[in-house]
Structures are given as C-alpha cells and as structure tokens.
Length: 443
Image (cartoon, rainbow, N blue to C red):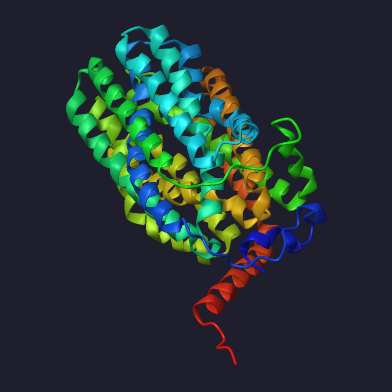
C-alpha cells in the first residue's frame, strides 16, 4: 500500500473511520513519461510564481495603506483576494473538465488572464481601478492550486513528490527573495513606483503561463455533478474531514494574523503600528522569511516524503504560533526571530498545503479532494480578515494575538489522536521506497 492509501488505514481511537467509498485501490508505482519535462518547466514556473507571489504579498496592502490610504473595506477585501480565488477553485476544475482542457493548458489560461488583469492595476493610478485589477488578478492565480496538485499527481511519482516539489518551492523562494530585495531598493520611499513593479509581475505571470503550456497533461474526467459536489468527501471520508477541521481552526488563526503583521509594521498611526519605512517592512515581511524558506525547502521536502505527516503538521503549527508570540513586540531583533519562525513555517507549510491530499485521496479523486481543501482555505481566508478588522479596535492586537495562538494550540492538540495513523503512513511509504530501491531479483 502506498502513501495514496492512507485513507484506507484505520484512524486512531476516537476518530471516525474512513468511508469505504473513499478507499483508494492498492497502489503501484506506474511509469511517469512526462516527469522530467514537468520538473524542468515547473522549476522555471516556480521562479516566475515566486516573484509574483512575494511581489504581490509585499506590495498589495502596503500600497493600499501608505499610498492610497484605503479604508477598512478595501483593505479587508484586498487581504482576502487570494481566498476569493480559492473559494472559486472548484469552479475552475469543473470548467476545465467540462471543456476537456488538459490540466496544464487550463493553468496557462488562468495565468495569462491574471497577467492581463494586473496590467490594469499598473496602467492607472486610481484606487478603484487598482482595487478592481488586483481583485481579478489575484483570485485567478489562487484558483490554480487544485489544478497544480492534479498536474503533479499525473506526472510525478508518489514516493518522490515532496522532495521534487521542494525544488520548485526552492526556486520560488529564491526568485521571490531576489525580487523583494530589488523591489525594496527600487521603491525606497517612492511608493508611486509600484506601477512599474506590477508591470514586471504581469510579465512574470505571462512567463508562468508559457511554462504551463509546455507541460504535457491529461484532461480531467467529465463531471456529472455541480462544481462543489466534491465537498461531500468531508463526511464520506471522515478522517480526511477531521484533518480538514483541524486545518480550518489553525488556518483561521494564521490568516487572521497575516494582515495584522503588515498593519503593525506599516501603519503610520503610532496608536496602531510602528510606521517603519517600506524597506524595513519588506525586510520583515518578505526578505527574512523568503531567505529561510529558500534554505529550508529541501529539508521540508524530505520530511514530507519520509516523516510522520501528523507530527510534521503539528511542528509547522507551533512555528506559526511562535511567530505570533514574537512578532508583535517593539524590539527589532525579536521581530527578526519571529520572521525566521514564519519562514520555517511557510517553507514546510507550502509543501504540506500543496501536496498533503495526495496522502489521503484515491489517485482518480485528487482534484476533488484538493478542491475541498482549497475551498475551505478560501472560506477561512475570506472570513478571517473581516473578523480581525472588525475586532481590532475593541480588542487590540495583543488580545487578538493571544486568541489566535490559543486556536493553533487547540488545532495541534486535535491532531494527537492521529499520531498512530501517521506512523503507519510513514512506515508504509518507507517500506515501498525500500522495495523500489532494492527490488527482489527475479528467478
């Protein structure tokens, strides 16, 4: 039994059993003729999307806060832009399947359309057009996550997937780190230069679209139901549903804190934030975490392939909790340490978030399982900023930080009953790896 078949194992005591309908067939490593082509173009795609991701993360809210002096409505929705696309990700899978598009071609179309939308934000110096362009471009990018996981399930072997994906993550971290440093130097204190930055990011989106267009892939099975029918796996496969519930609690806490980190270091109102210069903001929010992500990428890839996944998830949760504890201080060196914790958490979290459903789903249901996971990510991402901005004035940052830390600790405790299942998954995968590396000679 391979890592795909984790849902077939019995959960730990106290956790509901997985439904038989969700059990994957016994898995064997089949040939993957497009593995090397996929790896080659995905590494280049990783560079482009690393620049896009870190560039937009570092700039979207910063420009809204310090340049346009946007109100709470615009800031809350810009913070939730990624999540809006994640909520719509089942629709992108449904349309790609209905149209019979190969997975990689559908991804190329999404990224090309996102590049066009971002150019709108770059061409016009107007808050409403800035808002409209970002709110179209960013969701189109985040809609792609389910299809990316499906592409890797189609073209890359199970036993190497985490380590090979870490190379893409590593390239993305390096590209994003370089872009963030150049952005900080270029912008300095002149935020009106964001328009040139957005134009370059749009070109990177077109580059990513080209990379996807070069990768062979298959179309998904034609759907027989509505786009969100896959949500039924939350109760059909109850172990998967339980893990999604723990991830929901942790994710709401983490996503609630993300915009507050920017608010705390960038807001010039001293009663709310520290009003750091743009380059210091980018150092804490992007450069230090990006460097740590790059250094740790291969380590986390090997951990995903070899370690107990439940332990891995708990460790990542605790790294995010430490970031929350340390970041909202006024000592710069403590904030640097917090940024290191965040970079470690994100380095492992990106790989785990992108690939974990391949440990639970049957091979032909990967897109559906990932669609559920991405939809729930989007749901919490839309909810969290709205809640945190509404509670910021009455509660204050410090109280919100303690509440969110508590939520992460509860989510981690909820995973403890699954430790034995995680051990079985790791043992089965390591046994398969040993058998593949040391095959029994034939007669």
